[in-house]
Length: 134
Length: 134
Figure 1: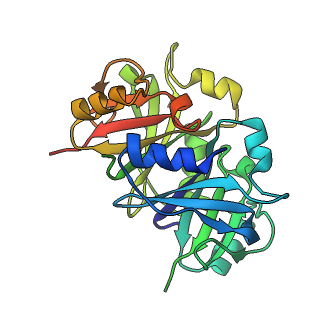
Figure 2: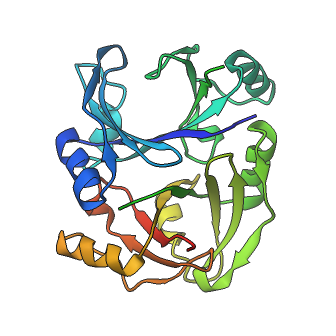
């Protein structure tokens, strides 16, 4: 069912500093900061040859990564995003297997339908599934 | 400098159960458990179209992931591994930039030279660098 690893998301307290580390010390290709107010984050994509790293900084009052950074103030890996061909079929299969889906599917940072799976069902890993572009 | 994301490593308390979750619930292609006594882990590779997930279970008395699992008993994302063309050149560049390298480069799970970078220098993310095959 799961296909490509679309991205690894890393929550960071200071997006400018984190982007500079990836561009400078690690020598990667780093995009511009992009505010996504509807997701409560500002994001910088680090483009690797085979996938991407998504650096996330909280934006606004009710950011979904605020609690994570309160526990891990210097940042940390927040979630993994796998591509699936059909998000509705994936949700049905996961529910049939007893996996917990966190809220309804919505539109993610790439404009594609996404859903999140409970980390307690996947070895402490928060998993995002994104419907791949057709 | 950094190239492909070679793998994402996830520490798990029960490798058989984790491999079954990735093969069954997530429908991924999962390899056999491989003990690596010299690294203190047993590993299962989940093969994705563009990268791999490395599921790690402690092996032996002094496993390098034992402390991680003591803090996160249900498991969690342990490190990211990026490929570099030349591990010695990468180490020299990182040290010049003030990044802390954890011990000398050694031979990793794929038989290639690897080194680890201090998570405090990279937003709470433990980074492995692996010299890509020529």
